[in-house]
Image (cartoon, rainbow, N blue to C red; front, side, top):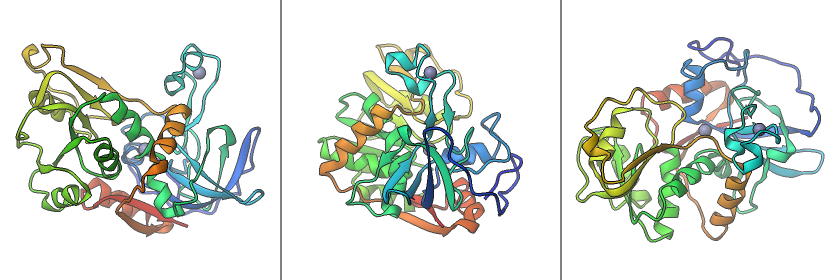
Length: 315
Ligand SMILES: [Zn+2]
Ligand SMILES: [Zn+2]
């Protein structure tokens, strides 16, 4: 499925089998989970995608030459020599390339990926179960770690990432407070079923102030809302790649060592830490499966908030 121009639907197309370059593998794609970032690419909110582009960066596939099941994440390549790469922050690499944005991704039957950036898929997960782990899991985990040792943690937007992180948070003995679109009773019910101790619309304050909050939704007004509901010294983590403008707010809301930060991309070390962390857990996700040629429908369902859990494309 090809993006020829942002703002237009993807087109089904026959393209040449990609040829692996140096350090790359050819993978037969089994599934690719849909991420909100895909929407930002398709809708033109992220600038300068490769065009035409095969979107998708939560790829699980098979290296047919070795029979290895591999996952391909958002971080597709880094330079290895810039200051960020050499200080353990390859997520900020000046020259980084991103799967399904500046590199072709996984809305396709085959893809190529740099073997050094792929992750082996644990045997305990099917392809379909593993796909949401590749971004919602990995980058979600980076955001979750930025929340420090918060005991009461809020998630604004209860979708693909939050449904995974709530399970980690519970295993870590924390309480999750889930905020959804107002009146989205289905999402609130879903959050409770997945382990949130409380779920309500985002305009409803939580029963007590929170130690940290992770914002997955793309609505900048939520940053101010989250600050209002935060204890002294607490952190608001913005986990998305794109957000609408943050309205001005009184300094008093930030005072007392509250902080706001963003989380960008992932490092390979995040991925290793994530798969190590979940080795003793069984991460369950709710998924809606679409065949590849219905990718536009999956994107529309995510855009319009009709989706509960994660959309997964199968080939
Ligand atoms: Zn670099
Ligand atoms: Zn993503």
